[in-house]
Picture (cartoon, rainbow, N blue to C red):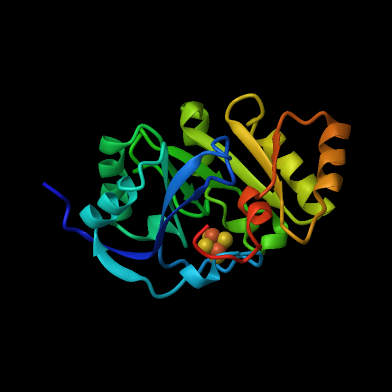
Length: 220
Ligand code: SF4
């Protein structure tokens, strides 16, 4: 029986996964509407309000219909909606690779354990670094295979902060750690140089979809 619980959806689309260890894979995205966290580099402000109401069952059906090898639930901030949890559970019944991308300010302890959690850690340039939910770090260290940390950096100050953060929380060598550069703010070459200089055990990534399509294009 399909789940009739209602969720607010900004968009459902097929694209190339751009920011995780799944980068490059064809991926169906369910972007839930709503956030309000106020990150200064937010690139999905259009998803912060509005959205179309639909049942969990309909969203699952539409995402599955793309036939992609992975499905990502994103936002906005998906975990603000109670329906995000049954949505992910139902997706896990249908697809072996379900990803959640979350802003990292809410606890993820109620997320289905089959879901791969891409957890944003917000550095100082976002203006919300004080609101990173640190209990998520403990959870990640208990079951590292379920988590990827994603830190998108805009400056040398962000880089220094991120380096200290992963050292202080002893994350290195546990979960995948992804360092990215805010598109148009930090030259990838500079970030690469810093990582190489420090031999930092992180994986550098670029926001792939912004190189394939025009930055700012929706539905990709
Ligand atoms: S948590 Fe994500 S959607 Fe919300 S303001 Fe920050 S970047 Fe934007």
